[in-house]
Image (cartoon, rainbow, N blue to C red):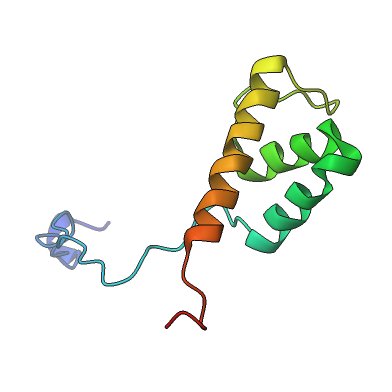
Length: 100
């Protein structure tokens, strides 16, 4: 029979203590968003419309209740269009390597 005296004690004193994280660079995106995919779907919106909007919303995980059949509500369509406008503005305002 094994008794408590036979077991090796385990030191858990530092198990719950976590040092505060010091971020020196942006944390990696856990969702795995691919900027090239976002750019490609945005460029396809004029041709494929809601199909590209739905793919973009799905990739970005924008909505909790995204329809699996590829349709968007009016509010979802507007939210995707607003994202596209902001994304394109942010991308166009970033300095290029020629600006440095």
